[in-house]
Length: 359
Ligand SMILES: Cc1ncc(COP(=O)(O)O)c(C=O)c1O
Image 1: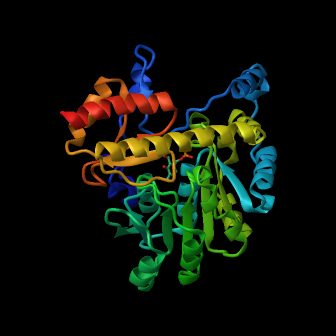
Image 2: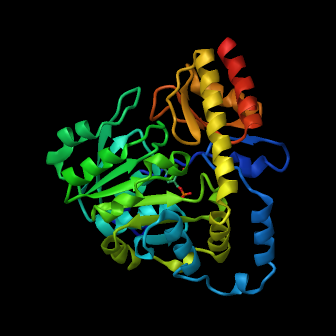
């Protein structure tokens, strides 16, 4: 008989990973990758730094700086918080997973407004959480007051919020986050702000000084275009980070990622110019969708959720033209999601969309 995995994993439904076909074919054909919300800003100064570092033997043979001291200090300065409020990880997924492992045990409730970032479900369920979904209906407007009124009595151990939300694009205003932290003082509020660099007015990092039940996760995969390097972090009160640090394995955060993170944080103007370009393109494309009569959700991030009557056919047509977008139809009826990168990529997407709409 095969060896049995632990019961949490045995009963867990595997997270359905979207096929990453671009990795198999991109050398042969040019393609436009708009399916995983990655940034596409890889400036020469980043490549120059990477080449320089990779010419040194120690970048291969030494273990990385497990404390990530330079990166942590640079992040703390950039965010205007203490170094005691920042903990780095190889991607914000690992940060989210670590928070679940530290704060959940068998049968504790995890409250999740949906649609949202579904990878988190696996982290929470495999750590023993019982997932309790709070469904939002189109046009997907988040209301802290309704969440509190409806779910306060459920006493969730963890609440998972995503702002700007993936895939719906809405923001949760800072005052709403405050209200939730106050209404659920015994819950850990995990606020995933992977996309907040595109809407910095919604950043909640300053709230970690006020609320000891708030943990914010952020990433370098979106606005900083380092998804392949794996770099993310938690901003939270030191008591939370002290617990998470017990299970964090600092060896997993490579030196190249650490150094490139520092380099990008030192080039604020360049990163900001890229963010501005994405936001301008997003607003332009939103206008085009409206003009075509395509239903879409207003977005505060680097993607747009939209609807087409036959999403499977549409996906195949986009792909036939070398454009990869994301199927979101399980979470949102007829839903598809397009990542915003450059204007030419958005125009290529739009040309296929126009054909689909006029057929
Ligand atoms: C809301 C959200 N959180 C976290 C992540 C994962 O980011 P990372 O690359 O830092 O693991 C994603 C990636 O798409 C995301 O959409």
